[in-house]
Image 1 (cartoon, rainbow, N blue to C red):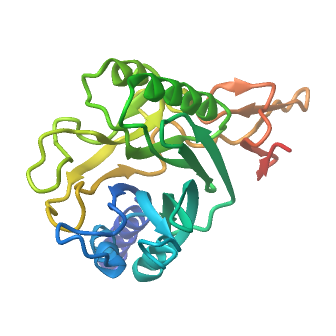
Image 2: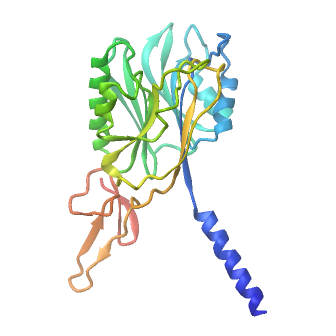
Image 3: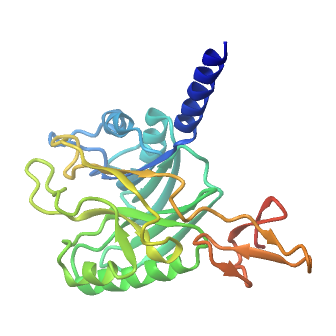
Length: 296
């Protein structure tokens, strides 16, 4: 009988370990307004590519919204077919409607922010806040390096405002060895595989699509990358989709519980990196007296 109890205990502990092991899958896809190599618009087909990758959150670029090219609200259509929540960020007016970027997510965003970015064609940064992280989507200017550099400075400013891990994904329109990406990587860790090309979809020769995380809210070894994939899909868009699977929550970056000095009764609060903090930024999550709170 003791033997069976022991075996049952081992089985229970193993299952518990498996069940608590979590991942976060982040994806990016420039959809070319859901038009494939045949130039036929098909939102359901594009959503099928997304659903097959099963992301938790995805940055989507080049979306039509009720314009002369597509009468549909493409962000909502993709959300419907992939069974995800859709958030849309307009960048330009286009043929009686608009054109822009979006975020699809399994979770409902706690807040949404749209930040204008420079470009000869207007650009934007779309930021969604979730319980444990922020996620941003962008599509940078393809014409001038100066616009991309200025946009990256704005992105860094926004990331610094966040008190949780800040992920960003999208079409950056520049190669890994470009001077602007080298500067960008001083503050952001690239999570996707820079050696895998994403454009053009038919025969990729350049990596211009990325998934990254701001270094300021994580420790160097905090994010463990389990998988990096550029999907072999040559026909549904002019870019190939990409995704990364991360261990989640990240190692060494979980929100720390408040510790109480039993002699003085004073509380100590810790940030995402486990460092003691005295001034908690507005909008940041923290733990105090066993309860998760947000600084108002």
